[in-house]
Amino acid sequence: MDYRYIDMAHYPRKEHFAYFTGLAYPYVGLTANIDITQFLEKSKTEKWPFFLSVCYCVSQAANGIPEFRQRILDGKIIEFSRCQTSHTVALDDGTYGYCTLDSNMPFPAFLPYAQQAQAEAKQKGSIQEEEVLNKFFISTLPWVSYTALVQPVPCPADSNPRITWGKTFPQGSQILLPVSVLCHHGLVDGTHIGAFYRRLSQEMARLA
Image 1 (cartoon, rainbow, N blue to C red):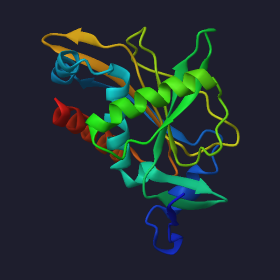
Image 2 (image 1 turned 30 degrees about the vertical axis):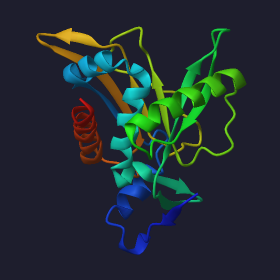
Image 3 (image 1 turned 90 degrees about the vertical axis):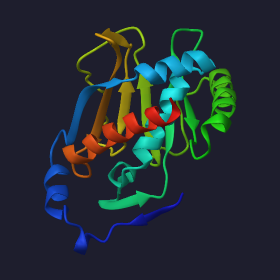
């Protein structure tokens, strides 16, 4: 895995990191609605698989925020050059497995690669992963448009961002998508989450 250690002697959030890593629940998160009107129209026209298309945009946006690529390892901060996504795949028995994807490729190449990876993950049906530190944890609730989401988290706390989206819904002339983000507050502040949402909208606009 390609990562570097952050120089804590010159890290501007050193005190914030120390404070939040000492909390029982060190996470910060929110849900915001993203306008995907044009993106959805293009995805239907081109017959893109909706989840994988959103997943690509989410991965590109999250990788564009250095703080989203940071993790806590043995009490120190490391920063990956790039992170993969790990998302849930529904299985025939009503449970789910995990699928790991690398979005570091053009979108037209990503879709067939991701569809094949999903098919293999569904056949494997496992929730065991060899390495999770370099992952964004991705999931979706396509059955409901929600305004808030409570995520399960481990104890002791991990530092992987969790990104989830729900069911699209109309509002006036727009089609909106609720997107939730949960991050370790020792690494990520509201300004970084705001930057992620802006990048996500930009990625979707670029494909649309």
